[in-house]
Image (cartoon, rainbow, N blue to C red; front, side, top):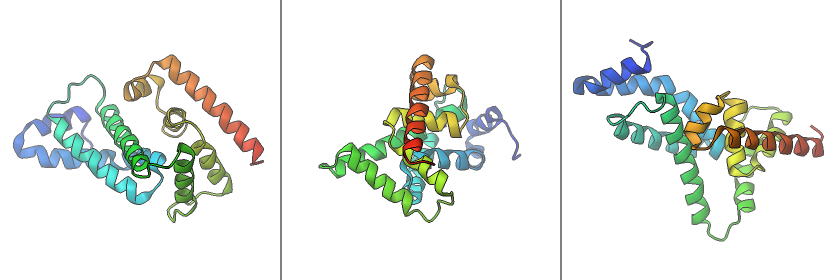
Length: 185
């Protein structure tokens, strides 16, 4: 039963007696991918765990009304991304006097002190460069570069045209190249 397709899991979910089991299968299937998507946005392990839990609560509440307009994972990915962005906006509101640059510095400090980050210096410099990107470019870059999502999938998740996403990715890669050259990585 572990290798069921999304459609089969959704069918199981329709049976009230099987909902918990079907949902547990869904969590097992996508928890790690969603965790890393969230983690790339908020950087903190603890915050990621909280947001992942909120994501799955929203998935549970919305699963009964899932309309098949997109793939199940794309829909869940969008929820995780939106929850992450909402978290960052609330964090910025909580620290009302902070500018975007100061919030970026806090995220950078989280990255540098993160005991779970196991990358080398080059990976750390790449992450620092990614953090300097505007929010939309950072999301697009992470989705394309790390998650290898197609532009059509990204378009569904971010509700943005494919052309705009391609432009964002192009600008992001150019900015990252420039920043890495400045730091001589």
